[in-house]
Length: 321
Image 1: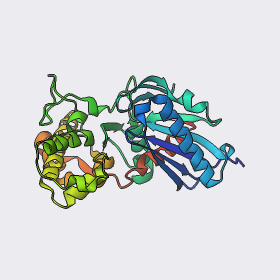
Image 2: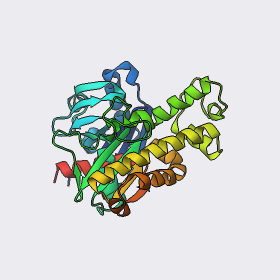
Image 3: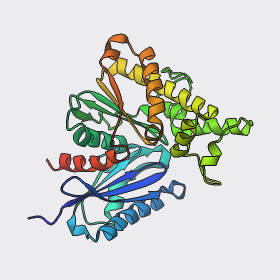
Image 4: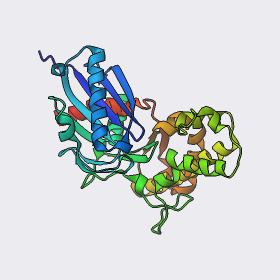
């Protein structure tokens, strides 16, 4: 009997590195969460990932011989076959073989996937128990990422760029545009929401938001969520604006792809889903063609940040089937 009983999944995000140890029963038995120090370059990111993995092993009193594989989700375009990140804009990484870099620190197989693709695999197999047919998975956080499932299978595209909806060009209302406008994630991600809020604060518009932020710290999704629950006018306006944009973009995509399910996740949705989903759904209905729109169910993932962690198991099973 093999002594290899565990999978390690690393969800590399724009602001945090979330690593988890999962056992043979598909249970998360240990977690480590650290900030992403992208300002110090890719070498520092690799060092932090390796440190988080070693911390997991130390906390669980395990060694590498008991690990089947390390699965890593990256917020960018990656080739799972070669382990190369083509581009990860929010991390400042381009044309970098992360599999090889992590592999220098460990003697176990390293698997690479786009972070939202990894989340989609986790949702498909562990939340919806493989009952996902044609779906769009969208995570809203530092940026906006997407994943596509067609006929029950993850669709990666001809050159692994499928699902990169965050880089679609839109106007400020969320309509698809070929003109030189902002991208979807530059308009409706947490980064975009916070940018608009900071500009309003600089103009002297009142808000309680800074009372939920550590002195000198950044406005995170949790702070936005607290302000929304308190009914802060500035924050509800900006989050509502972003929600309308998200709904319109999802409506246009649905008209094209005719999916039956849209699953939303990411820090922004996790913090404010109850407020955002009704607005997204209404805006979606206004943008989508009636017939394909009728078939769509829009929901928030119940797995939250755990979705890509479970996706690490599914990715290992895919590469070892």
